[in-house]
Length: 287
Image 1: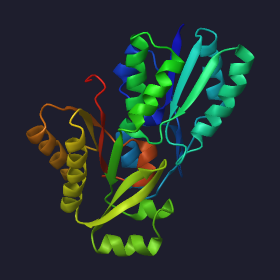
Image 2: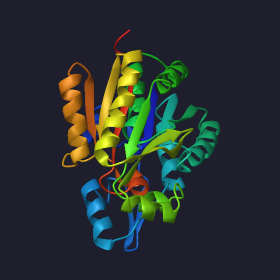
Image 3: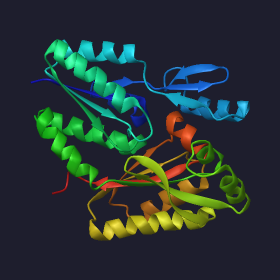
């Protein structure tokens, strides 16, 4: 049986990976006061942050257009027996719900099995499920055998974020505007975490240096319980906190598989510029 794999643009997989493994990527849309842009198609990550600074505004994001999703699903249904769709967390976007509704209609019309999988996260945390699905597909597994393995992987995954400016969190309703103002004044750098699929404040820490240390402490706790992990450091190379995380991992855990990825535009609307994250999950290549 042939299995198609689909995801949305917030997984921020490399163009090379997408092309090599024939992944269908459906873009979300970023809207500024000067217009709307398809994520990673009409606007690059660098262009997004430059525009956000130049316009001095916090943009909004919206899920892929239903017509685009329907067209993609119908096209894949004509050439595949099964379709796996991995989305960003339904707690921060309506993408999962829209994809599920359209998948149900197309599955019935085309007599094909379509499963929409809620990653409960985004960025590389979402991308890792696509990477795992690709590996399992290459091993000959079908859709219904892959899904429980993704569920098992989800139990091992964790991600912690922090931000430069609390204003984006205030606009998203995760903290109050007054708390954001006081927090910025006092250099409070909250550690954020996906809780039940939503971005929530995990702890409030003073200064980025202490935030990085706390993130690494959380990682080391997980590593002591299970040393067979993969790691991703998310953020721009010129961000000092990212540099500190990379240096620590390189010096203290050179044996671990470490990925480097950016904070893309959609999550950037929630977190703002200079955000960064430390993500880890089970290395499934090790028994």
